[in-house]
Length: 157
Image (cartoon, rainbow, N blue to C red; front, side, top):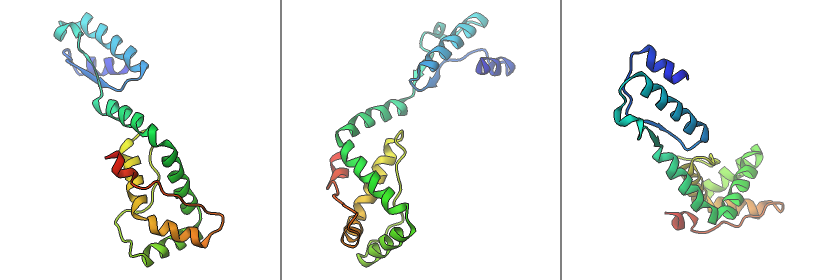
C-alpha cells in the first residue's frame, strides 16, 4: 500500500514491471499493486507481466542448493574460523603462523553470510589460502582438530 501511495503521490500512472524476490508476501504485494494500477489507468499489458522475480535471488537459491553437497565441509570451515577468531591469543598465533609460512593476502578470515552464496565462496577461498597456518594451530593446540576439505573451491568453480 505504501508503494502504491508513493506512485500515486508522484503522479506515476504507468508501471511496466516490479522486481522482487520470491517471498509469498511479495506475490501478494505485486497482485495488490497490479489491481490498483489497472483500476487507476490503462496499464501496460494489463499488468499481466508486472511481477518479475529477481534474477540474483534466483541465482542465490540455485547456488545455495548446490552448496548442500558441501555442507559438511562448509560447516567445519565455519567452526574453524570461529575457533580462531573468537580468541585474541589464538588469532595472534594464527597470524604468526601465517607470517612464518609466508602467507600474505589483502583479505583475512571472515565468516560468510549464508544468504549470500558469493560470501561463502570468498570464505572458502581465503580459508584455503591459510591452510598451512591452520595446520600450525593444530600442532600447537591439542584441543584443535583441522581437516581441510581440499580443493573445495575448485570443485565449486
